[in-house]
Length: 283
Image (cartoon, rainbow, N blue to C red; front, side):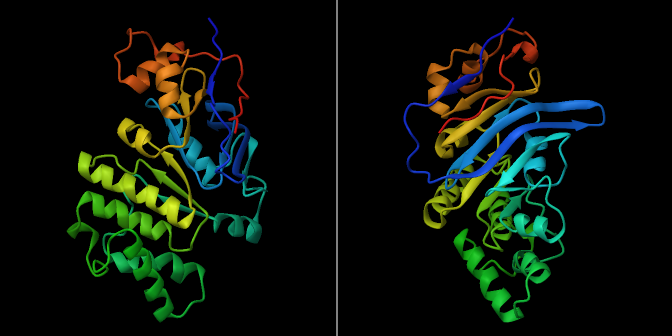
């Protein structure tokens, strides 16, 4: 059985100026096991772009390849027009300076204060004097609503505050792109909404591009400009577009089930199929 990929675009996305990330024909594998195959899409400058899908579909694998942690089996990943896959040495480091990363659990160093955590990238990757680093770190904490918490240890903070601190550290070097892995996972609804609002505020005020891995539907509806949905059965993209339009108008019943939180029929997730493994997100 075959069904075509769901692509829903209702009008030009003129608010976004250009493409800042382009993934072309990406295939990622661990040993002999292919996780995602021949995947292509674009991320526009200044948007909140979400990667979602069921467990084991390759969301985190895709993100780790996009930030240069892993080398793909094949394909290219362009960051602001430069291929991070083929780049080496100083060229690769220069490309990586354009991105910041916040991992699922924050990954803050427990033996360091918040200020010291945010200072760390600046200490390692710049020649700024200590006083300037302190000033920048305090500014980043203020941006995420943590002014006055610089001397606190991560263990003394709530989960939401730890997530905010991790975002502040990811912003330390003023990257053009922020990658967030499950930024609202494990948070209560009010705290999740506050993190969502922070993301919207940062992209609006600082023009930062966000690439976010999540399966939290309230957050997706609140912040996502566009998204791709991955599926482990086809090892690739089964839907792309805006969340509400996919929810209401997708011709793929499995996609509608996901966005409407409906129970499936009990069939395997691998029932997703597509005739186009090289689908590209349209602007």
